[in-house]
Length: 184
Image (cartoon, one colour):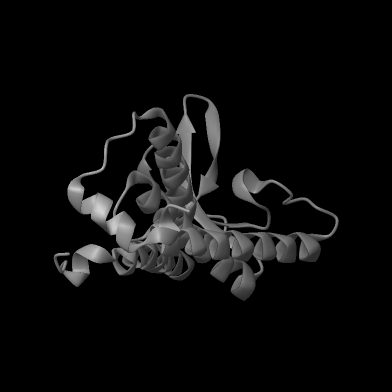
């Protein structure tokens, strides 16, 4: 058996870097918005189409549950669900993280997005949303970079199910043999 370069054997650290970059960019943009844009106001980027705004979202994606009669229950239910999902995604990444695939990159994006929004919910009791899009007369619900990472990750997962499976290269076959839990 030939010794493999350790950096080729385990890509998990790089996948976690993707998640960390999502969290960092999400934090930086939300902090910038909180510092520079008054709550409820915005800055037009493309008039009539795109604005950077400062709003709080007490609910889930697309402001679901935002008008709940029990906002604290919703908050902690969303935190619990997001943390459980993040733990499950991390476990899958540990099992599959020995190589880059569309699936592992998608999961890294989703992990970063989920943790970015969990931070907001735990610290501020709501999520800072700041990207406002209008398409003709439709106002898309405001969102943030964490939401974008989650959606892009979900789209990549869906795309991965549509693409034909590629046969593994000899190196990837050896990696799978070196990481039997990934194929179990």
